[in-house]
Length: 115
Image 1 (cartoon, rainbow, N blue to C red):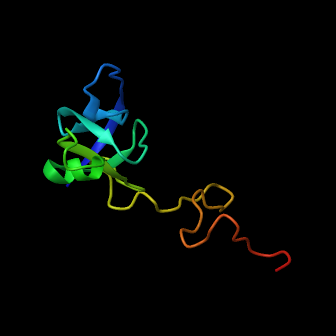
Image 2: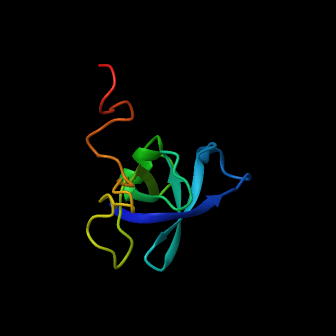
């Protein structure tokens, strides 16, 4: 598996029949730009997990699919190069409120009020 960043979609309307209408993305792997089949709906800027070889064909839909790189997951949090290990840490503003919510709390979790 590889960690890559999605650069942009790639549109190729004239394809062989085996390629069906799968979405393609240009991904960056170090300094190399590669084309990957997008099996998960990634967007430009997303950090993704890619698989290659026979795993890429299987993930794209069948062992006969002509792919050697397929996006199989979108990474929730990934530090940029040179950043610390944790980019999800909350930061405080001048009022003492945190900019990021508690990771264990869901959108409906609130303190106070009727229960």
